[in-house]
Image 1 (tube, one colour):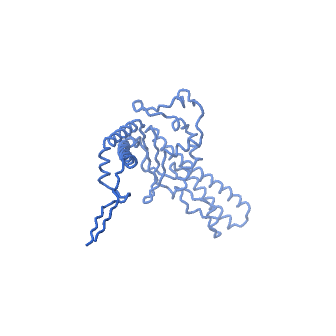
Image 2 (image 1 turned 60 degrees about the horizontal axis):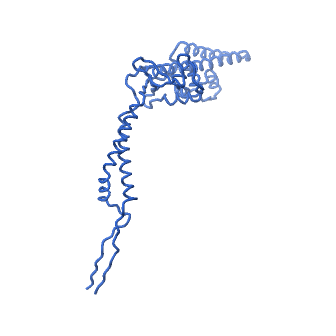
Image 3 (image 1 turned 90 degrees about the vertical axis):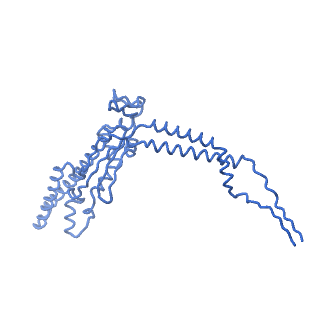
Length: 312
């Protein structure tokens, strides 16, 4: 009869959950202390952040009323069986891209003198309703910059980070929003953006139509065929009608459905979320420190050597 007595051993990489919970319980005060410290730091940080207000306007594209790309030249090309590829272009999409473009925003900031409000604001005083500027950067009394004036590149990047332009895929509605310390300034920016993009698109289409009219008038002088002259006159009439319609409609590309108003509740910062994330981060950091300390610095118990006894 053979007898075998073998002691049970565990691999070095086997996880002992009871040991882990025991280590966590021993380090509970460290975990609790880090959680409280991080929670307090998160609350203080959230309190120190300035309130940011967001103003938003909802717009409806007026693609049917705007002049199509190509104008009278598109109609002339269609008579010859040539497709210039611009008739079905979406004016609202073009306007949205222009609204985000560096050239448009740079001109917009310079035309309205918005550089101090974009680059030198310290906070908004809710009691007085006025903006307070960083005295080390800008002096509002003298309207002078303290040091180097911000470049157009930085101002445009700052504006892009504070604005948002998007279209609803289901309804086609376009929203334009802007975030700022001052709710009044946020509303003002949105209103001026909508007004200026409409004016910008109208000016482009009027200029294009007038160029088409001059081109068609020159073609009338060059040809003696009565049929072609009649076609040119019809195209000139069409382009003239577009110019008249463009000047008669202040909302040329976008019609305002829901205008921007002065927001009363700040959209940022999310103070509760910041405090929750800081608290969770503190707890996780404490757990990690306890586990690492237990793994690297705790004495490892010696495992008995495996003994095998054989007998007959």
